Image (cartoon, rainbow, N blue to C red; front, side):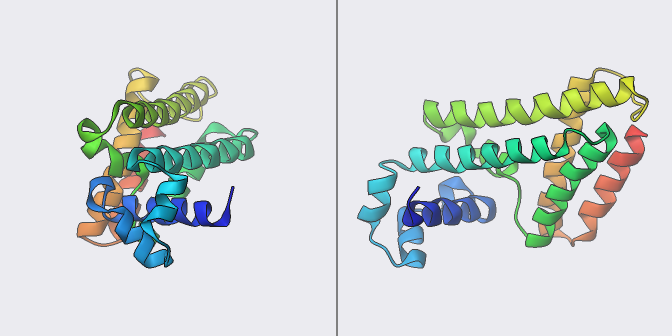
Length: 183
């Protein structure tokens, strides 16, 4: 991957997490990177192509993290996920899921499919982690693990949103309560 392409993806990722997908343009990227819009279009003919690349990079990074965590007990794995969100909170950004899903209906079908793939992959991992952890006695909760995974992810995403409005303690309070609810 070219250095310019990497920088475009990195900046687009930040813009999505801070402004939202529909709130930035190629001009925002070209201005900050001191490149022409044509350079961005060379790598990403459409904004949807850029969005798909940002999501793919996030999915690739998540796969790497999951492999690093797989030998840990499930409660420790989930804590690692919480740590990722805590870092995002400290950075003042929100997760891609929380940033992209509000605009989902405005996306092209390929971008919608990539958002769905990302969301499904994260939820599948959290669900498996909860199911396996409950079977081993790490977690105690009622109901289906998939439903609990939806609650965990929606709460983590919301914690980042509320942290923007209030203060950084919101994340700690919400993640702490989530942890207690699973014990």
